[in-house]
Structure formats: structure tokens, C-alpha cells
Image 1 (cartoon, rainbow, N blue to C red):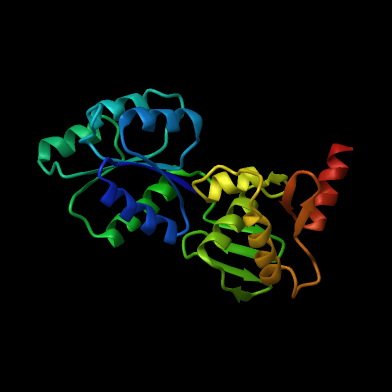
Image 2 (image 1 turned 90 degrees about the horizontal axis):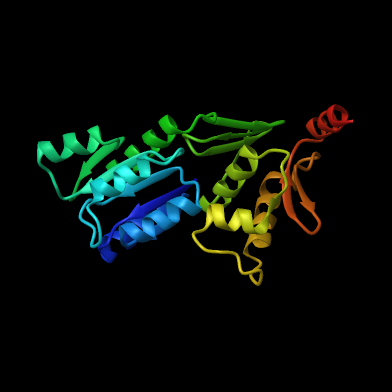
Length: 233
């Protein structure tokens, strides 16, 4: 899942990036409203975390611009403005949550997860055959065996399960899981796919992660693939 953090204080922005990335999220940082709007117009985010005191625009005005789009992500305001009037106004203008600085990161993370559960109509449990991923507990099992995954491995597997049967390019995977553009020179996706295969495929007779030559990777069960081809034919 991808989160936009709009925060002009680099120290706080870096702290949020590190914490959210360690929890398995991809993070983009915007230091002002102009850059934030560019990001929102170019990318579909699962959540935006918004400071109110920005150098080029009041955060509440930015909130209104985000909410005026046909499709907008859940928004959490993260601000030093702690007056009741500020909190009420932010919520009335469309914010889904309001957290006052200073804050405990564990509380912010709990609120982030609550907003993502509320704002995402996708299931909390994803499954392909005997492979099961619990999005809330961040637990993966196959044939009942618990599989330990690193945060980025978990994010890639979740992305592939949410797009089961759909070929995903290396660019799509990098841009969804990492906060960088894929330059075509790095083999980071291939490395992580090898790690995933060693954990969820190598020990089992049915292989789910397929390589699509010239495109990227696809996760599917053989049974579902046969049913899909029959339906298309």
C-alpha cells in the first residue's frame, strides 16, 4: 500500500518515512502543497498524512483540493494545531482522522491501519489455493505452515495477491512497493521475487509465482488459470 506524507519539516518527514516503510508501506514525501497536488494527480494513494502548516498553502485548503477530486484517499491530519476548533474544522472539511503533534508513532501506525481497513474495500484476508495472507495480522501461511516474510517481501506478495492472475511489470512492483521510479537498471524486483519463491514455492509441489517473459511476474493457481482460459475461450 502507498502513503503520501505531506510534511515540510524534514526531520519529521524522515521519521515518518522510516517508520512507515519498516511497517511495509511505500511512502512518498511532499514538502509543500504544490508537490503534494502533483503527486495526488499522478498516483492513486491508499492514504494521505497531511500537516496543516505548509510553506505555500494552508493545509486545510490543500485538504479541500484533495477532496474535490473524483477519487481521493483517506486523509489523516497530523498537526501541532491542537485547538478544538482546528480539529473540528479539519474533520468537517473531510479529514478522516486528526492526530496532534507531538505523537507516539505506535498510535499513528494504529490509526493508519484503521483508516486503511476502513477506506479499502478489498478483503482483510487474501488467498490463492493453499496460500493465505492475513493483511491485518501480517501473517502468511501455505498448507497451514507459517511463512516468515520481511516487510518488502510481504508487500510484494500482498500486491500480487490483490492482482491475482494479472501480469505485473517490474515498474509496477517497484512503484507500488518502493517510493522510487524503476530505472530499468536495478534487479531489485528479481532479487525479492527469488526470495519469495524460496519461501512460498520451492518447498511445495504447486508453483504460484510465474515469470512472464518481457513483462514481469504473475501470481496465480493452475486451477484458476485453466478456468480463466476456458471462460475466455
